[in-house]
Length: 175
Image 1 (cartoon, one colour):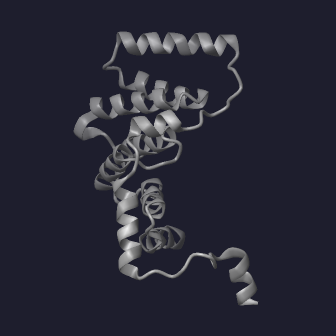
Image 2 (image 1 turned 60 degrees about the vertical axis):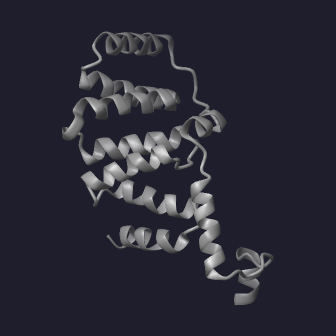
């Protein structure tokens, strides 16, 4: 039964490789990640229904208000949330980045985790160096943040290190 299960779910075709080679391959994968701009250019754009005219007009007013008052934290919060809702992930990430910059040392772990998530989403789910930086900042501010910890596991998995992803996710599951 296990053999049949492995044939169905496992990876029976690739030959086994020494751990040193697998670690070198994982490092090469990590080092060759695309830039944020490259990943965003290749990322599929979310397909969302067109907003109704009243909502679209309100969003345009919000964009204008934030442009006129770039130091308005609440405006930036709303802009990030609504741009994400519309599927404008790069614009949502940029608004969240500006919010984090505005708050400086007072930016919360949640603010930083949201920036990391938007950076990753705008890159099509790929964790670029920019996404990893936002993730590191979120974890430095709040090492217990579940969303940031999940994304840390994802970073490791994307770069060929399931051995590092599993303990992170197992800890989240246990909690």
